[in-house]
Length: 582
Image (cartoon, rainbow, N blue to C red; front, side, top):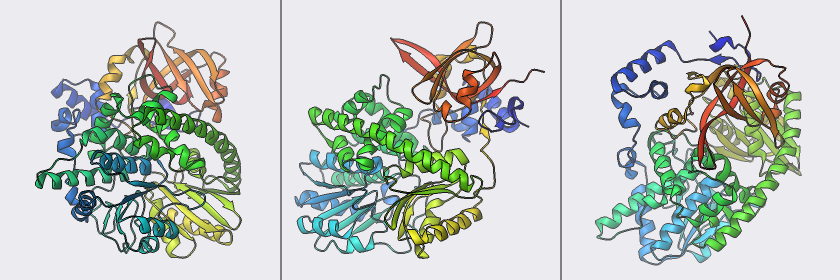
């Protein structure tokens, strides 16, 4: 049965409330722990046992951090890394051009600098070199370095790593591994085929951090000390959230502690970036994912590939401010390019049909730096895995995003093995590929077939799952702060979503091109301010603006808004439905 009788909302979704079992279990947890019922609902939905409830609210990194040696090649990697440090050997860090790659590189560069070692940073150009190590770059780095560390890439780079003659290579990665591994000193990757997969949720920065933990252990055994690792957790938190790694297990503790470190404003690059992004509150996962992450990414997408990593690693406030300003400008430019590609891709995908197991679009000259973002938009619009490809001549470079329960990376890798792609790989939720024009149609048809076998395309727009209903008067700052104890929220751990039923729109104002600012009232003394981002990208914006006095149910997430020293609750609207009178 639908929640509040909403079978089809303004975005075409059915609303689904908590199950009877969840309601009963949360009621029991509230009675036995004296925790607020709304908080108990969140914990129960997360599957937290009653006996573990209070401990879950205070995650301890020392209890949740896995033993680095649980990962294959870890001890060897850390030992070779330390040998290079002690021997003052020449070290190069080869990093991917996204936030995870930049953060991973910065972790190593900062740690090494504190040990008195200056390393070389190399980030490949997205357009000229593409993702991951390439033969010319690795050959050139090997000629001038003793050790090359590949971060957030390298697991499938057999030929480029073989080209690094004269240098040792370590790979610290999290992308899906193949049947064989490159011939190098170590490949530390929780998603190697011979790993258990228990730590497969880590991003590359998480893997790098574990390697530094192991390096610290080896240093202590030798009677020495390494840099303070806790001070590096802001970088791990940024990468984890921006790479949409699930906030479960150790990730939850890493991000929670990392947000505390970031709030201390000690890292010049993150301080300058926060200021240019006009962050006026303590950092949270929204800030990392939607304000900081896209700006760090902008250099790799449409600008100079190493800007993000340089920003995160710098000690100079002057350099940090200059780099942040440049990344902010590039991010604005990226948005303009993205909007144009998104409109064309959506039109093409709609003409092809949004109900197939795979939604895809390809176009001439579409910038490879935005195809991943546009694929994410298509995925959200159709609730299907999506691929977007930009062609330059006969070669197309594309990116894909998947939905829960459908492993896109494995299917892309299979296509590459079958010869339909020049290359391709990734992980469950995201993947990249290169395809020749004459193979485009058969490749997409085959990919659709593989994804259909995993259940892609079986449903319509996703049901909107709600944690319950609240009246505006119950949506207090205290309630939001209590619920935040179950966080941080993000991928794999969604923030609770509530329905605020039967409200009037007192005020509605368009903000920017697509957003809508609202003031809602229950018609008595209760009310709440709200924001609907992207409302005018769909039917919600026009309907709520031209409401004609109608009443609506609203669904979304509660957040605390700080303005002029005053705190208030704001509803971030995700959906709305007309309230039908009996």
